[in-house]
Picture (tube, rainbow, N blue to C red):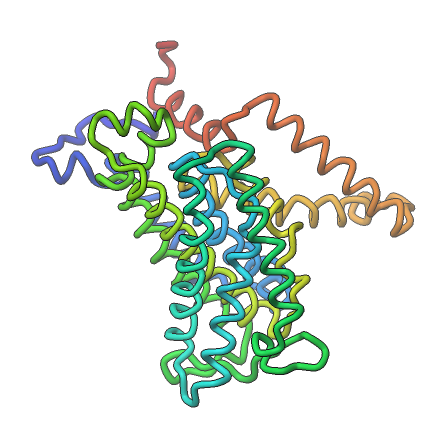
Length: 353
């Protein structure tokens, strides 16, 4: 009975088209944002550093990938490569240009990933489906070779790994996990709001038209070259910024293996499990991938079961894989569809229709 729209009248088109037209949704989102901002004051440094910061950055990367795969229907297996380009471009800007602000380095990494993504998105004008996935997989292999063999990328590092020093944002030193968490939270909120408005506008409708049937979209006047390459550009920019955050804020020092094929598959699983074509699905999928392994790892200790570390690791992978298959069978449209179905039932309860 609490989730009702009775008495909530819309008196303008702007009110009817707002992101959260239901009052209860607006209150819930504001409460969630307030809790997220207040969380660093009560959470431990371990929770911030090992759980919440990776969750936010991977949510941002999954958000960028969801624009390409979920909204435009272009399969990509090279997301880890776009993250790597963003991270290494931001590192070179930060290391080679004295006094380069952190925000400018992050945006520069996103722009470099945009150029790289558009270049490897050109084959999408001719191929699609599995063939496009293989083409984007080539971007992953090329980036792995490039970052390992070209010493200029790693600033002539003998070991191939790079590291960043002390970080500052707007004159404030990012020397605590709480400050780094707040930086990631602010960027994620900004990009999520921008992405939500993009997919609700004309460009988002073009992406979805290309996803549903590209031939019909071209017949009604949508230019495939503009729609597909713009999706690659926006997706690569967001993923590039996420890669820069992953290297600068979460890792601090990294090597090319940090952005390998496993990272690309992990992000693709996040999008599929969370829900294709859904902004909230990126966060739900990231929460599933990041939080569930931790829960499965600590569950035997909480229950007092005498399980060795190796056995617990194998059980974690088995249960995790089984849960992924279960969710894909029960709800192939992802966790976001389950949440949407629950909301609709609350709006109509106790009536069955």
